[in-house]
Image (tube, rainbow over all chains, first blue to last red; front, side, top):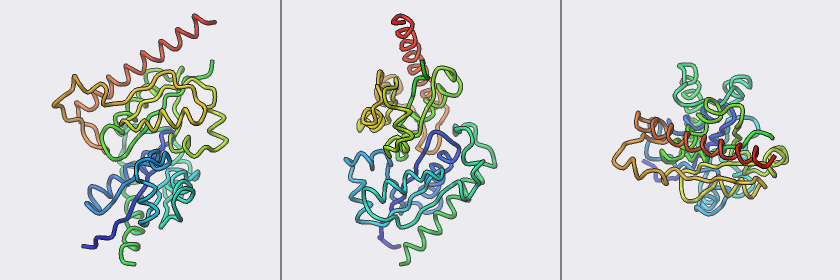
Length: 134
Length: 136
């Protein structure tokens, strides 16, 4: 297994469904799809700049997974560290209307939401794998 | 009075971030939907004018998952007035030994704890509202 480190930052936004999907997609990568090789970074801590997150993103390729087209995670990485190695906009994958739906608690997840999570996690994993083999 | 802003950290690494997030969603969607609202911390920390306009000078309550206090600090830096600030581990004493889940899901005990955190926030909201009434 490669010892290359790759970071993934989710927006985890609380204002819309897309934030819940982005969060769960990254967690799915961590726990199921690419266990042990995904380094997740906390976006607020990254922006606060006191947890070593920025240094990580400067040193290692980092992927942004954003819940909506505001792309807060992507913009933050580019502002404080360097260009993102890849980015995902959940709204582009599941559609604007679905992504901008009412904020979603994990106890109200439906099969449809879980399918969105899988789709986003799979696309993020594709980017992850492409970086890994470079 | 505009709605009280209740903002969690939603940290992704541990269960504390999810507990903060779920407790706030309980408050803003179920327990006090007419008195409260939440905003994306991810958006708050970008400092975009759009979100600064919504937070600056407004009454805010924060629920953080760890002692880094990202939510409290970020809201304050954005100009929000944080009248109450909590962090999830502060209320753990009565829950020692319980398994609350992970950053992905909450267990039954986790949901009970989230409910307890939500009730703490509801109490805060009521106190703030009462304060407003007294001062009017």
